[in-house]
Amino acid sequence: MTAAGALARGRASFARRAWAAAFAELSAADHEAPLAPRELELLAAAAYLTGRDDDSAEHLIRAHRDHLAGSNPSGAARCAIWLALHLLLRGEIARAGGWLARARGLLDDGGQDCVEQGYLLVPAGLESLDQGDTEVARSTFGLAAEIGDRFGDRDLAALAHLGIGQALIAAGDTAQAATRLDELIVAVTSGEVSPVTAGIVFCAGIEASFESFDLRRAREWTAALTQWCTSQPDLVPYRGQCLVHRAQIMQMHGAWPDAMTAVQDACARLSDPIGQPAVGAAFYQQAELQRLQGAFAEAEQTYRRATRWVRDPQPGLALLLLMQGEVGASAAAIRRAVDEPAGPAHRSRLLGACVEIMLAARDVRAARSAADELRDIADHFGGPWLAAMAAQAVGAVLVAEKDGGAAMDSLRRAWTGWQELDAPYEAARVRVLMGLACRELGDEHSAEMELDAARWIFAQLGALPDVARVEALSGRPGGPAAGGLTAREAQVLRLVATGRTNRAVAGDLFLSEKTIARHLSNIFTKIGVTSRSAATAYAYEHGLVERD
Image (cartoon, rainbow, N blue to C red; front, side):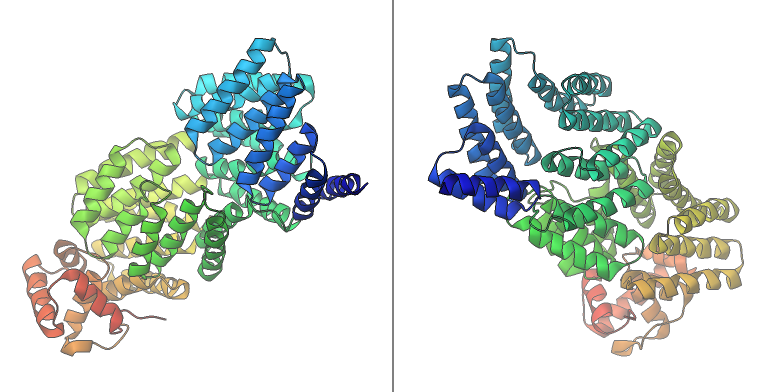
């Protein structure tokens, strides 16, 4: 009676999505009397949903063996497939492959016509996607969807349609992919699929929206995931991932303090238990916010933490090097990153950073090449987000090429795009470029207006390195000159603190490189430093960069 009561309570808790209670009660029932295979699968799901990955795997293995003992090869294969899927999500490819091979052997040996045959196609489709074979991936996921429909298995159908959407995005057909995603969000928000599958689809749907540069859908998916997670307080695997995506969207919309709170929460949640793959993205996002706010030492440390899970934290790390004045190291890092294969979304981010870094390094030809490639990607995929990125990059290159009129045309389009997306930081960066374009056209009054507007936005956001650069460009110091520096020396130091080379500073201030070198030598002597990085640190420590 005790075991039966605990089992009944466990099932009831599972049904109402009280995952911690379900795990405790089903575990108690299992302790009193070993659970049947199907009930072990429930216990494994409750363990997974409360972040007990090792317990979940243990119970799935037991269920797999009990299904085999009961001459149920399809049930045993099902457990093996879910074990493999969970391992794939954790990045454990070898073990996942072993369980998939076992599941395939069970189904092939028994000549089974069952829904598990469709589940086997899901990792096969993912493998084709990883190899860049979008047609094979789409065909494989399509066959899985047919099997899911034939057996009335909504979990399989959802996973299959998700895969089709991912394949469409990889092939550049974002319009059809959006239709698939819209159908999926209905399925997961209406409770048509199991919670494990829903969580997988939620996270992948948000990733797919970012991959297709669809910020509106990314916002909708993230809001839906947040609501779904809130309704299940015990839920662990997806809550941290949800917070990472929320932080990305908050950052774009200028809510940086809220974004930092969300990403710090994500780092904490995803660090315990160990092994959650999204933790790398969480630390990378935290480092990005630290970099933008001028906390360079903290950002470098956080990027290093991210590398435990993310092989190469770019373009953030290259941009940090640029802000620290290490232009050569920054250029080398971004060149290497751009030379490596990457999907369109990540490559676009790399190319945007490459334009900025190459212009700082005075390699206008390389910047033009990166901007042109980014524009080609934008023309292919479409969408306001990517269009704004590309127009900004092209405008920046035109400013460097001293074509102020053409630059203004491109930059106006970029500014309009960022405004429509409610992205104040990017819009302010464009206004800086517009100020430089106006200056190139001889319109100093308009240039000062653009720079002043940009500086105000940066100050509101807390983007201290950008505030420093704009103050130097406008010639309006934001704080007293420490160390006996003249107004011009303080102006030069503020620009150096933004990572500009001597040539770049000379171009911004319409002086010669020789004059800038002389100013810098005097600055080093006055403040007692011997390197640009030390001078940058001095500028922040002594209030030469305004902190309002």
